[in-house]
Structures are given as C-alpha cells and as structure tokens.
Image: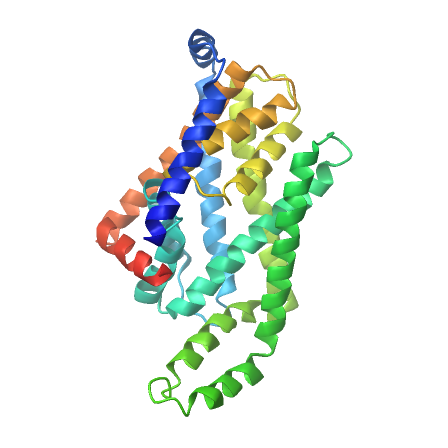
Length: 329
C-alpha cells in the first residue's frame, strides 16, 4: 500500500510537471531545435556518464573499507543494475536492490551495503552544494533555489555528521543494545544488534584521513564528469549560455530527484531543466529540446549497460526488484 501511494504520487507530480513544461510550447519550434543539433557531442556526453559510474564504483569500494575483497568491476555492474531498476520502477528501488546484490554477490553484509548507499547519497548532495556555493559570484540565483539548497544541505550535513558520530560510538552502542535485547525471548539472539553493527560499520571508511581524502576526490571527479555530460549536450545545441549553466542544471536536477516522480524522472527532469535554463534567458522550446536530448543521453546508455549487466550476471530483473522491495519494507 505504501509503495502504491508513492507510485501514484510520483506519477501525479510527473504529469503536473509535463503539463507545465509543454504549456505554450510550439511543437514546430521543438522539431526545429532538434533538427539543428550537432549530435556528435552526444557521444562524449554518454561516455562521460558511463565513466562517472565507474568512479562511483571506485568510491563505493572505498566506503566498504576496511573490508576488502570487493571487486570494482562487480560493484560497477551492480550500480548499473540499480540504474535500470530506478529507470523502470518507482520509489528508487534501485538503491535497496544494490544493497541486496552486494549481500548476495559481493561478500559484504546487506545492512552494511545499505548504509554505504545512504552515505553515497549524502556525499553527492554535499558535493553539489559545494559546487553551488562556488557559483555564487557568477550567477544571480533565485530565492527558491537557495531555500531548497539550504534545507537539503542542512539535512545532508546533519545526517552525515550524525552517522559519523554514531559510527564512532559503535563499540559502546552495540554491546548496550545487545544487553537491552537479551531478556526478550524473540530478540535475545542478538540478531538486531548484529545488523545494527553492520549498519554502523558503513562509517568505518572515514576513520582514515587518506581514505577520506580519496573519497572526496572521487566525489569531485564523479560530478565533474556529470556536469560534463550536460556541457557536451549544451555544445551540441550551441546554446548561448556560459558553462556555469551546465553546473546549475546538474545541481537542480539532483535536488529534484529527492522528490517523488515517475520512473526515470520523466517530467520532473524536463521541467526543472527548462526552469533552470530560463534563468539564462533560453527560449522554452529550445530548453525543452535540450532537456529531451539530455535525458535520453543520460539514461539510455545506463539502462543499456544495466541490462547487459543483468544478462552477464544471470540475474532476473523481477526477482532482484522483488527482493529490493522486501528489504525496503
């Protein structure tokens, strides 16, 4: 029931965004804009997206330290499979699916994998907020963007610091929870305490300054590549806007992905892209054409690579999705 509510809420918001984005748009102007695109630039854009996922796999592997034995190639395949599920199913089931697959294929506890996925999301938001602050001297940003960034940033910082502090108290918290649960007849086995220990171990990677620095470096590379995706498509359209527009489109869309939407972020992605390019006085028809091409350039290669990963790993899309749904519940 909960998943159904989220599904219909996401579809509803996507439909509203689609109505807003096509309102007043001349289809002929969209076709004209699409016909004038230099599609050569889509190849480096798509390549930058795939390479960014490889760096996400490298960062994900570091987040499991001091646990070793996880192969980057395997984590890359799992990440790609997560993108497929997120693009087809609602409620971002690709994230719990990744945790399930690591538990089954990667040799790490599912609870720890789930914690690293949450940490990844927090790191992504924090990195993009650093980008947003860096843009302050160059762009006059609207109040709605600053308010949204402030709320999300405050939650991300609080969540990350809270997890870090709790993780460092793990040696005290887990034994205390075990003693608390011991008198209970069902929970006396300490299973919940063990799962909590795995969850909190997701912050162990930040115990080393060198490892923390490498994680920060990978965060930077990941989002430089993601911004490059936007910029290459921007070059294909020959938009008369600065490179900072590509950064801002990336930031706004990542913030927008935090709200419910239909699978693949159809509608929400396009509306936010058009809204952001409007800050640079880009014609709405051209902006919508850009949004359509950018969306396809981002998602089509990732979905294709994810389907290939499912086939290579001999996995069933339906079974992986079902296990992810059970974990989320």
